[in-house]
Amino acid sequence: MTEPNCDVVIIGAGAAGLYALHRVRGLGLSAKVFEKGDGVGGTWYWNRYPGARCDVESWDYCYTFSEELEQEWEWTERFPTQPELERYFNHVADRFDLRRDIEFDTRVEQARFDDDRNCWIVRTSKGATVAARFLISAAGCLSEVSTPRFKGANTFEGQQIHTARWPKGGMDVTGMRVGVIGTGSTGVQAIPQLAKLAAQLFVFQRTPQFAIPARNRPLDDDTLEKLKHNYRERWALKRESPTGMGRRRPKVSSALELDEATRTRLLENSWALGGPGFARTFDDVMTDAESNQLTAQFVRDKIKDKVEVPDVAESLLEIDHPLGARRLIVEIDYFETYNRPNVTLVDVAANPIEEITPQGLRTADGFSYDLDLIVYATGFDGMTGALLAMDIQGIGGLALRDKWANGAGAYLGLVASGFPNLFMITGPGSPAVYSNVIFSIEQHVDWITDCLAHMLDHDLDRIDSDPEAEAEWTRQVHEIAAQSIVGKTDSWWTGANIDGKPKGVTFYLGGTNTYAAICDQIAAQGYEGFVMR
Image (cartoon, rainbow, N blue to C red; front, side):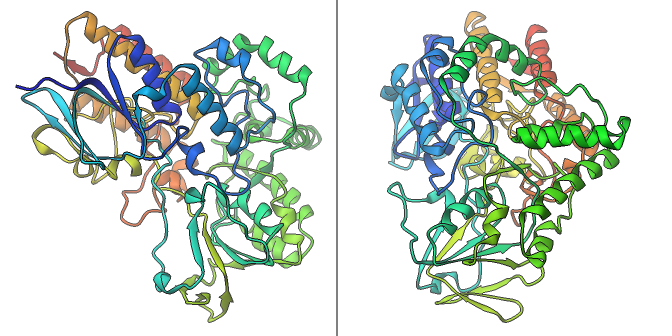
């Protein structure tokens, strides 16, 4: 019987895959990483569209496992751009000598668990087959693109591109007639940049969005010195935070406790500060409808003040969901862009896109738009898309897509029953995208590698989750989601953007601090709910 080629196969060389490789090596295990791109960085390798930047502050969106790394790296802006983040992950790969175990331009097409040999048989796009004792998915929650299938798309004579497949060398849109489909986080970032160069920019908006000003700024020497000096303090705050952010929690528990003048003053202060922390000006914005409505109206008023044409402002303000029910967007000059004479907002909720034509596209009201470039800012098949894009088969040939046919779930978001020795970083059932995801990634990788160390120390060679423990954990995930406004609104968070996908929140909304404590407790109790041999 052939022995495994390596101890661990890791899928993906983004933030999760790089750290997983570093930690696995520290255990003395051999590892192989397969990455479908030709460079590291994951999300920050693929998303090169104009205006792409992180909506978490740079001092929070970074690894915490190495104080030396944090001390030597110097961020240049509050919210880092895609090029800066790609440079950061390349620096990490070089600093820790990670590239020698990464095979680029290689996609994992199939992973099949061999029950007799107790290992995973992994087949790649290059025709190679690798056997590994353990399989770690670091494929990412937002890596499988979602492109609508419009009638006539193959007839378009211009260019079509998804924002997550923007060419490395960029694309010159100067003088072009550009149509952008989608106004989520990506569209909000790309639209102001495209408008500066395009002859005409048509924005096809289905869902108006709340968006908070970024208040981005360069980081001066004094700020950088303070950040480096406060490294451990921020780390402790991240551990205590329900979102994994290094900022202190609000002191006001409810907007309803305050008189109007005080409430307005606090909202103005948060608005002036900008960034994603605005949603936590009061502690009950996400749970109390009245508090949410008061905060949302404040944002609507601010948006209205930015847009000069009343009809356009009205279209941007027809927001049909509570603040925070969809991912709260951080913007730079987004609403002001609609004051430009070359920008047109098209309401495709009222008049959906009927078809793509050779010259552009046509909406249901019969109006045609001539275009040279169509940009799909239509997001991703979130949480499960990247996992289900591979043919993953567990015990008895059970396909992961069949196991999750009625909804995805895994015990703690880490291990799905029937798929032994497969660990999922930020899988369904974990805080994942509802957190500072790089901090959640670190917590998952630390837990996984501590678990592997435990198994090595105790001569254990298989871990699976107990089906009953998995079902109970999934029930808790859904129960918490039912208490939040997030689970009551259709969005990519609930899978509503993908036809045929089971609807529902698949990530844990109870807070990263609570989640990490549960994971630690389960490990301390001998990995209760997991089955080891």
